[in-house]
Image 1 (cartoon, rainbow, N blue to C red):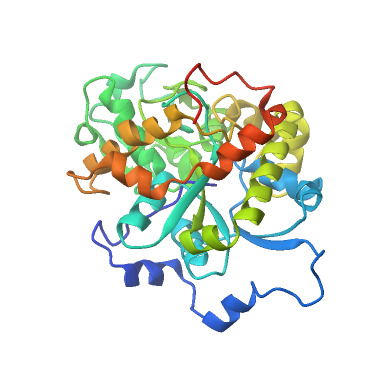
Image 2 (cartoon, rainbow, N blue to C red):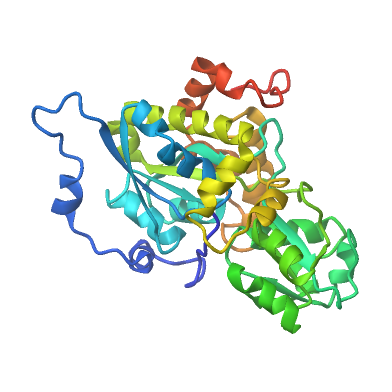
Length: 368
């Protein structure tokens, strides 16, 4: 999944400390050797290494591998599971991976600490809007918090995997009823521990990414305080990350990757049950029922639009600044412009409109 912890050492973590937390040793020769061209193999598929943790939001990436989409586009994709978003980013920076799927929190934190990361695409989102997140709030049936009654979270113990995308989402949800994070008792709870935390009463509610919100509803009878498909006033899509160096050296291969991914996303949208089955073969702890419920929130839509960029500028960066992840005086537009390079995704959208024909059209004037 694309949402991972980022600031265990606080907002002033150094670049060296960041790399240490990534847990990867630096072996420059070995890393560089991964990308040396093979002599006499000009027609061989190009190898790309993707650091990603299998999950429902990124399931089309697994689909692309299983049904041969990458091979169709001349790629030999090697998928590796990182220990965290920091680890995934570290692998990209040290050339142990070409691409990674991470959340907005990790991405913006990495860039502001001197790491040359670039966002070239979206793993999941709702194009044409600047408001999206896969985080929802669900509560214990005993907590007395009914559906839609966010205000009743005041004074309650709310489980949250601190330093992940739901951290920002909870702040955004609370703002809709005039509350702040200081109005609730935050309890650090990892995503897989959310159902148990609710059932034992150690927390009254949790703000958690899908599919864990769906799992809580189905396994322990949690109440949907925020229903599936309803988004807080924030923009937290999954991001496809590479390094500035890899983007310069391997644009052609990255374009092919994004094209294959777009094709796999469309296949998954048209065949959701088959895509769920392929994902369940990798994610043993998930069920088909929870997957279908979670897909009411998760958008398998990689398109980048003016509203996507505006959402990052107007909603994502301000929330990260308010939570201490970024400086309060950060220039949001300049920061997003430095990190996000939408050119490859836009090229896929323009060259292959048929791969997005099943989606709602982008509002007039919203295309990049």
